[in-house]
Image (tube, rainbow, N blue to C red; front, side, top):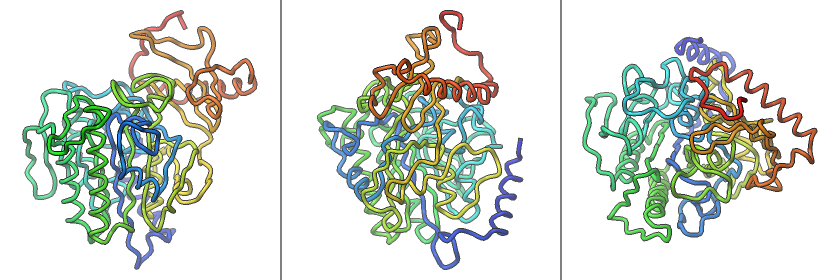
Length: 445
């Protein structure tokens, strides 16, 4: 395993020898980066992604002024592994966190050997994570300041887990905790984010706002009075939208609007409520898109042209390599699965850099997605792991059938053969990295 410090030192040396890209040359401010990560927000819960019952005027405006990726995947169908993918640019199975979500009594976490976006931006960026962590809440993985973040204010894991407190840590700040005011959590997270932005407006900064909304329990802010047609779920989504509007206004007021890349997305598909946008399955469902496809909007005036709509495939593991390219930093010297999707955000009709994306359920490969095709190889019914191969793996033409309703393997045997070969190759590469036994099977396969 590559030592993290050696990797970062090697990357810095490479940058010095090659010279930094134009975006980071002397005399030009390096861009700030803000990632707003919603929790369990569905693909169809934003107006520009099809919502009619939830009003999201600020997110809709953000999309009109920037880029919208319409075929964007989370790297897992549940929380912890997806967040590991975002942080590291690697399929979560490489980090040891692909299996289930970290529970309150668990002692595992994101290894210190992993290089996060925050670490890779050091030393010239101020960094903060405000919101939900869920990547380990005991030593040595906790708090997030162990992973390159200068400042942390937030929760150790999901807000439906107990015991639960809000924690603060950072330079000159004693590690403290306080009780959780659930209805005002979203407001408090954004408010702390605004303070971090104000304090670091004169230098490059990286901020991750990792919200709890709209994950259950739903606790609408009584001060907002949203009264969404979608009930409490819609209220908390609309509160997120309101605060995104305040965030964009804050950047403009500080004069750093054009210097700041803002990304809004979700860690996985919707759970008990929310819209999967007509796609099959939901959070936790294996193979099918409803658990993995999420909204993704990016905005930086002057660098991202207004009105970009890109249907190419991409995934949240692309954030690390994209942020590195965006800010003029070299990639960490480790195995990165994500790719730089800068052209998809800045050029109309730019193709995806991915030939394929691999979908996992826990530590098993369950699907392969290419630009047009999708191989779905496992399904789950209640507690039973149900391999499709008992009958046949399912092949979907997602250009014609985005709801994954009809298996077309009999019509396209050549495509099925190619996708099956990709699937078997991915299994052979990644599944030996797993550390947990597979779930019970039916049919003996």
